[in-house]
Image (tube, rainbow, N blue to C red; front, side, top):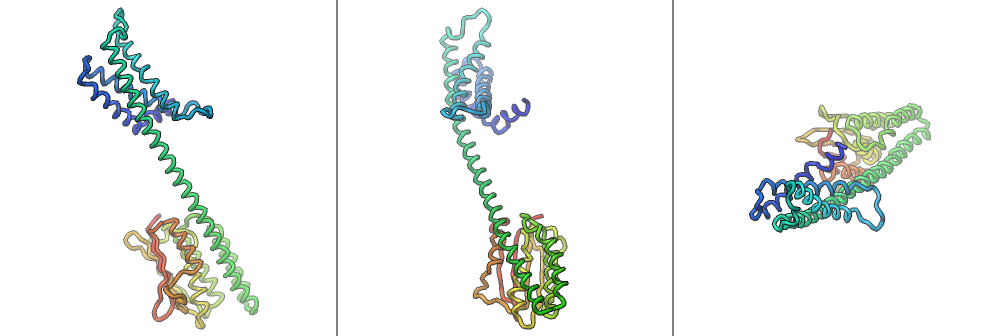
Length: 342
């Protein structure tokens, strides 16, 4: 019961009710003969009783007939409670043995005037509250639907990336098996260990850069076992960057793209450097390779990087950027920037 009363008389609603009750007080003060104290008590009581009626019938009864809208019931309750409230006050203020207040034209005029003004301002305030409440409900539903759509889109994009990465890695192992390389079993063992750590994280909405770097290191070690003479790699990571939040497969997508489109096509292979720096509230990540360089004009993104850009925008909005640029004397750099979140 106490919790219900606190909700019915929550401060934002109570503030509006008290503020509106001052309007009839100001309008009637100049002609009120019983003193300002009795008037402010009556107008405040009208505001509080109107608020109580609005809140009670907002929740009760839980089910209404199909022909009766709840807002109609709330406004009807506000209209009914105003004369009832004034009836109580005028009855209470009538001295024992004195004639009824309705026999006094002046008091009857005050009763009718306060009841009418209370109904007028109560109805308009109730209508305003209903419109605001409806608008807030629509906005909250829109936000919920937008969030749900974003989460669904995120899951879809992650599902697109998962088979893309797995099929590329399995194709590399198939090449080792077909060539009779003695490294095939070791590479397969490394892949199994990697997948045990990586696959459960694919469906998480967010991960940390520290976890991403672990996966990237495991992936590059796996690729180095496949082509030990053609791939070298290194890491430069600022202290504290490992705790930053990011979508799963963020750095791994950049590194896998560098291996597939930069190192693999190069006859003598190359080197991949992963750099993560913190600068004025932003994380600047860079994956550079000394492979064959950009093949598409303007450095347009492929399927994997385009999907990564969409995932970054779902999480960070327009605050995240992803671009490709050529590197001298050869190779390419993928540059990623997003706001720091922990």
